[in-house]
Length: 324
Ligand code: SF4
Image 1 (cartoon, rainbow, N blue to C red):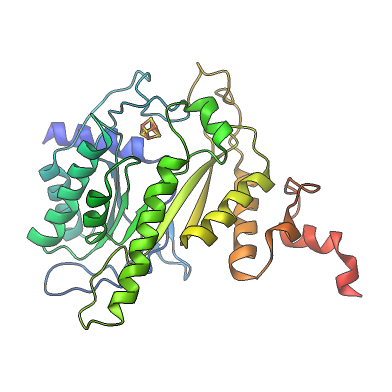
Image 2 (cartoon, rainbow, N blue to C red; image 1 turned 120 degrees about the vertical axis):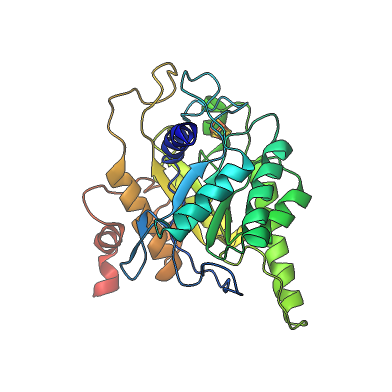
């Protein structure tokens, strides 16, 4: 029990840097088991109607074969390592759910051995929860870049939301701090999940019992302020991802300095860009809900958001002719 508690401490702490876990919108119904994802949102955040919901947010393991400089789980980081077994994650989720501590599970992982080895374990967890434990609560699963499409497709049948982090907004930024990774390893699975969602939607029109596949859609996260991309570059990527892969959300996570060794990253002690993060979310909202076009708010001549005023006011001040 003590070992499980220690694992929980290590793996919940390592998971806290991933912010891509708000909003639910799942249609999964309780069919005679426990929980109901349609009734609860994702945790550790506030829903649109102001409810605070809770989620068991953990990594399966913080062992990782990669060495992304911005990540606390990178292989060169001297931190305590741990790994849950499949059974331990299932037991923890069920115990917490039954005690009403959580309303869902947010499960991510470092990559141990290889992508498929890790993804296969994540799949076993979500499958066991749904089929053996009859758990109908919310599940948000992070997809492992490089995992095979068969494993991703099967996992998608059991989870509500899937996400895969783009990490840095540009390929150049990624090369600077995570040279072993590239954007293609994110785009490929994202395109595959999107295509499968669309295909299943079309099939659903023809058959009575709809198969569920990632009913709450996909999301991604970008780390902001770790590398020198400007706001126009960041929002251009987000805009393209919304349009190409029908994402439900793009999350912008202000970089928290955690690496003293890498000269390419802001040093420990520098302030995370939280106001900038907020301005990016405001811009994101203007694009998604207020029909603004990206170039109206940001463009090559106006490539940085004003930190003093919100992007809507900034647009109004630059376009007085619209108010004559
Ligand atoms: S692959 Fe993921 S978990 Fe591993 S170091 Fe990179 S960001 Fe961290």
